[in-house]
Image 1 (cartoon, rainbow, N blue to C red):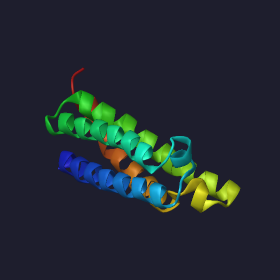
Image 2: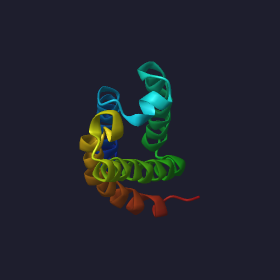
Image 3: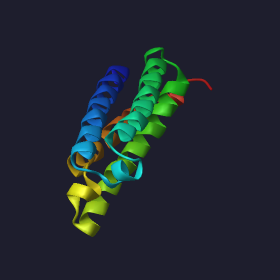
Image 4: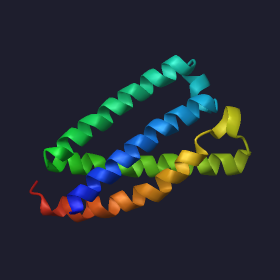
Length: 127
């Protein structure tokens, strides 16, 4: 049952990630300009999405490395969401600033929930 919840939450987090990328691109997140525009920004995020899918593949194969990588990814996602919210609160800028606040809030809701279940599964696997 725990593994089914992990898969569901991971897929939900992945869908939220895709929405987050769209929110950043439409809201002209600072990084879009730094990377040289929307096409380059989307290319970098396509690479990240590929890594996310590879992690999911290893989790489906019930490999410890998949769960550990998912845990690291989830922590990074939580930090990303918090960073958007903090940046927005400090600067007050969404468009052309810290776009991603809405989906970043979702990261802070789903991420800890996923971490809870991942931490239950990882110790049960052999190294």
